[in-house]
Amino acid sequence: MESERESGEVDDSTSMESVCIDTDGIVEELTNTIGAKLLNHSPLPASCCIFRVPHPIRRQKIQAYEPDIVSIGPLHRGRGGDQFQLMEKVKRWYLQCLLSEANITLANLITGVVDFNKRTPDCYAEPLDHINKKDFIEMMIIDGCFLIELFRKGFSVDQRDENDPVFNVSCMPQYLFHDLLLLENQLPWFVLERLYNLTAVKNTTSEGNAASLPDLVLNFFKQSVADDFIFKPCLNLPHEPLHILDLIRTWIVFPCKEEGLGCKRKVGNDDQQQSEERPPPQRVPNATTLSEAGIKFQKSFKTSDCIMNINFENGVFTIPPLGIDETTGPLFRNLIAFKQCCHSRPHKVTSYAVLMDNLIDSSKDIDLLCDMGILVNWLSPEDAARFFNELYNDTMVIGFYYEGLCNEVNKYYKTDWNKWMEKLRREHFGSPWAIISLVAAFILLVLTMLQTVYAIHQFYHPPK
Image (cartoon, rainbow, N blue to C red; front, top):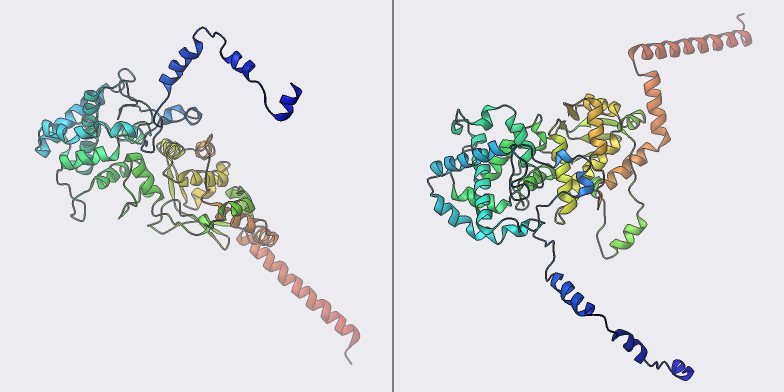
């Protein structure tokens, strides 16, 4: 036995015997059971773009992720008693309006989208076993045509009916703004585009050009917010949007500079080594503290700037303006949740949330940025500060967009000379009276020195 162990030869009859012990059919039963549960494909294919908001993010503010008055797509279909009933009737009425105006039969409309029955379910990150093929096609047509007709009516006042509950009830557009930008309340963009093309009705822009689907969507959402600066139309979209929320994300981050302080990152074969040598991103102090250290804040006056094009140069923070109201929180929360789930979009909006949270700790910071015209705040200063402080909780940022900018800010902030100069300015040049007092003290000092010099001169050189 010892020789067998030394030579590495072990009689495995004992181990084989233990495997062959009567197991009462457990091995065969588990083989069949587990084998039946194995998957031949990924449960989350790359084509997924519409997700359930992850629980750690959802629990931060549940109402920011759930629809109030209208369900779009399958994820909230049939949920909630009477809250969706009115809009379900409006959907069917809008479909009839669209069919009448577009001069297309319902049969032709169904024929035009029936082939999407196989492609569309792959866009959703959870199984849609609860809805059959016929109901799914019906949902695509009714929900999609509702959106097309809604955006058309929003674009042209002449196409609105005097009995329309959407545009005759003043609160409806704001409710729809909230619901139509929820991550869980989306239809794939290619479905909307197909329906738009099938039901094409000539709408023209102010320049006389035919309005595209993005034009109609942009116009609707610009009318539903207190400050439409964040919705900057893109002359050329960098890629086809995945859905309406992704289109809004594109308007917010594009055109966004890809180089500069926000993106000082070398790319190469030694990328991993460089990332190990580079120190981790550091927080920057809040706006009030930076201001006390001599850093200035000013609003960007470039009308083409997206809100993410934040610059820092020669001690001056230049930040595009942002309006904050009750719709801003759900919008940014769903944009961040979308990026946390979707692999094909960079973490730009989340990076923006992180930087703004750095700059804003309290209502004092909100007041400072409002005074500079950077924030247009429709909330209380305390609620606005809380909005930024809680915006990206339970999320993560890969490739922080403002890493270089934060390093430059901290470098300037930690320079003692800048702090001394700002302290001097605040204490001695902060008001006209302080300046007058300083000038008077300086004149008095000069006169005193002249008198002293004259007395000394008289002592050593008395008049003859």
